[in-house]
Image (cartoon, rainbow, N blue to C red; front, side, top):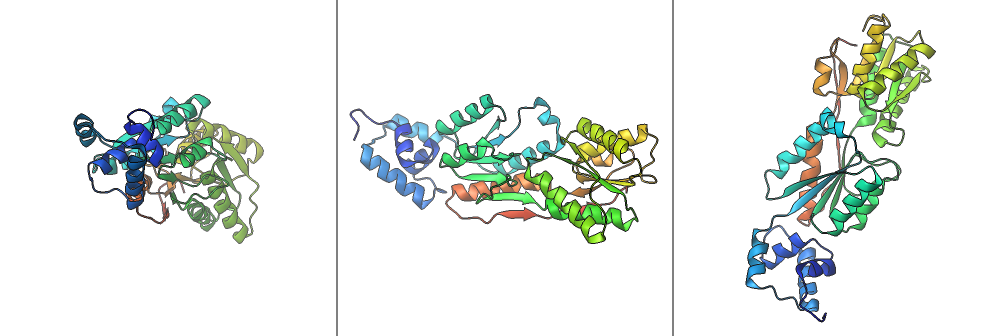
Length: 333
């Protein structure tokens, strides 16, 4: 026992849980795992913690929280339809609970430090991670916190225990097979994020489809998942491979940029060059022409991540999910 009355935070630290979890245990709340309950009870006994009436009243009113950490510092992220839909899905499930949602953008060192402080303060009961890159420090910070963690997608070089992902590889294969079925033989791709698993999986699916068809997969340019990045990559492809007749683009945002460049170069879509994107965000319906794309259930990704995290917080052992993708045919291919 320590030499002064222990605090709620010290009980949480000794038990290896959040202060919100301690509060729920002290108030005999439901939805606390047996393991967490036992850890708190053991810490209370070891420290000699005796909550006073005011503290118990405060604890009873306390609400737990979930932190969604995104490996980005770009203010334009909130205009990115992919992230907007994921956050919408996360929030839809959070609203069904008494939890609060904390959002942390944490690509820079400053952002990572801020994320670390959130975890160390035990202000959150669980963590959602999104858009991680290879050897991303956010994964280590979250895992070392001892909190329940669910990954949105799988970071390169590491398969986490609990994650929700889309079938990026299969979806890219569907897109490329569709282009091949149209009789296209000089097919290029615009990929992105060589340090991101989703981009690599989409590139692999592209290569697999071409290999099975006996076609070369050497027409390649890199973007950055943005419309501007797609435009730059498309211009580079046209300069190096002016005979290309189709492009699989690893995101709809990049595909929108590619369509603009093709139009500027006098290439008709799909007559001269067929284009297929990936994600099926709202933009895909309003490009000129409307974009054929691979639909991944983006909002469902956010919902399933959050449901999985809540199950973990309740002491359950959920199974990781791979969500299906499908081809949506429009005018561009």
